Image (cartoon, rainbow, N blue to C red):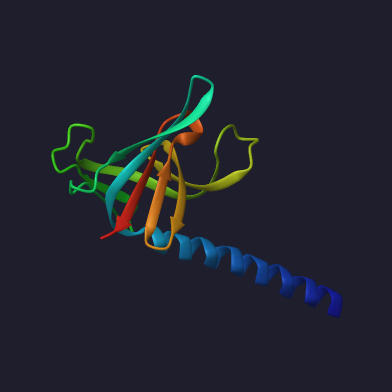
Amino acid sequence: MDRMRNLLFTSLTIALLVTSCAKEEANDLVGTWKLIEAKFYGLEGGTSSVGTIDYSSFNITYSFTTNNKLIIDSDQHPDFTSGTFEYEFGYFPLGGSNDAEILLVKIDGSKWTYNNVGSTMILGKSYVDAGDYYFERK
């Protein structure tokens, strides 16, 4: 009986930890973020290269709400579209359904890798040879 009680307690503790971590990460995403730069990775002439676009002089913002809406204000920059979009935040397979789940932001179904380092958020598409976008919390 004690063994069963210990197993139940351990299972509930693990479930609580996983749930609270996911909620904490979601709280890290919610808010307004200013786009600072984009980095692009590639190969030129057989060597790796990194290209950077500086967006810091523009006021391009991504505002993630608690009701899964993303509001993009492009500051009339031609590379971005202003509007309201649906997003999901959580653990999803990056590729096929058999792939391991990683922390992603899905914006209108498009998968972006997510990383938060201090006050910098990185939304990435470098896994498909596109750019990674660097934001600062506003």
